[in-house]
Image (tube, rainbow, N blue to C red):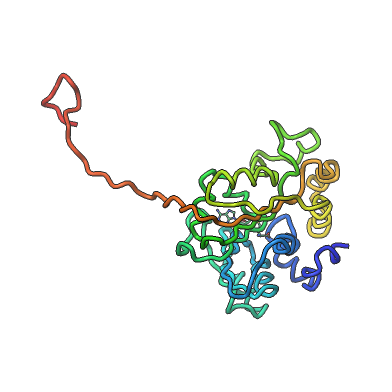
Length: 268
Ligand SMILES: C[S@@+](CC[C@H](N)C(=O)[O-])C[C@H]1O[C@@H](n2cnc3c(N)ncnc32)[C@H](O)[C@@H]1O
């Protein structure tokens, strides 16, 4: 069934996909779902942000011919490079270790930024969309897919999710939340923000496949049945509004003045 939903992914060997697992989701399913809704052409430069061990980066080049800057913080870029070399795509998939909040790229360099099951770790900051959009050419796409909510949770998580829930899961959000979040940045026009139909089932299928002992997460998904948990996808393009330049220093020169009103001789 999943092979029919994700026909591109179905061509990749299950062992190759499992050997590149870097999180709780099947990164190729999410990349396929995301790229179904956007246009990628072989002349494009793509930043795969938070790419983990880089399976999505290989997929992006193989499926669409794009050049990919496979950028991630936690995972070794050497292992990613070996994966790209073995897949025969080393001349078009470039592994880099970088923090998404301190990217080493030129302004306007990318035609698209794609982020699979990663953006929630840094992208909920109100100022982040403006920062990241500066690396896109005007009209370039910002596109994310990953674990999220089918609707926002007001206050504490519902009872049936509490065994699994951790405070850091506050970064899980709905497609509507992301739409508003990006719209408020002023520099992005949102083209699409939606939820994968039966995404919780795909999440559950993948857990059964790669982490069958993860009883807490499996039970949370089974009890929730998509009431709150699912996969979200958001696609926007950079509009013509100039981004605010990042502030990394404010130059000041010291001026000496009397410290206290009653003691003009004492300078601070
Ligand atoms: C759940 S994993 C997903 C990895 C991969 N995209 C996938 O779907 O398998 C989250 C990824 O986000 C990356 N990440 C988290 N914080 C980051 C940051 N500040 N800068 C760059 N990457 C970050 C981690 O390195 C990790 O690989």
